[in-house]
Length: 287
Image (tube, rainbow, N blue to C red; front, side):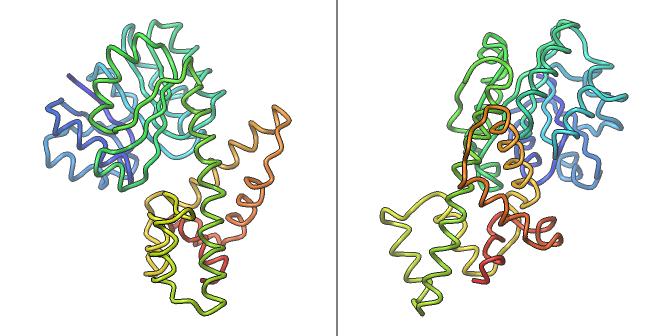
């Protein structure tokens, strides 16, 4: 199948690579061209502009930064909608706004194309190992017949949640769970440090007991090594939490744990937010 992939950053690069490995013909675009170099060496064709994708591919995947980037890629002056054709399938895997996902679906329906929202979780490790969890929203028939066989090459836990926007709602709920566990990991390490426990021994004990979590297992070792390389960037996580809080405000939902975590991450220095992974919350706690 001819597939286009727009966005080859920390996660998108590995994800696109799995589709090459599966034997698909791949067309790629990224604003920073150098981030496509390894895929081109493996046989992908480089596109000059994102809007070229529908000219060459049957299915177009996107995973970019912010909702404004998603809107620009899909509906902007040089967006995919300008070249999209009837019957084509567009799959956005960015963590974005549920409202925007619904808007994109509605606009693409007018030309007979299908737009689905399939955000992912699992970070850089999940992307490399094709073990991502994937949450799907959009036309069910298109998802089952066209999209699912492709994303099965990218993840191991793939669930359809309903109409357009439901994938994004699921991802925001997921990010809420991560928010509070990242705080719990940082605060437990902070306390252990202050009472002079051996942090490596503490981690080994807690991570295998009732205090264990994905965040503890995945990020505490990085914190202890001073490794803040991004599996998922702090500024993207802040974006996700803001989206969740905006949805909460619309529905008059009060989530103090999420509000606290959002505040803590925003208080990290701008350089930390822009260049580090989510485990950099340890810098706020001075672990």
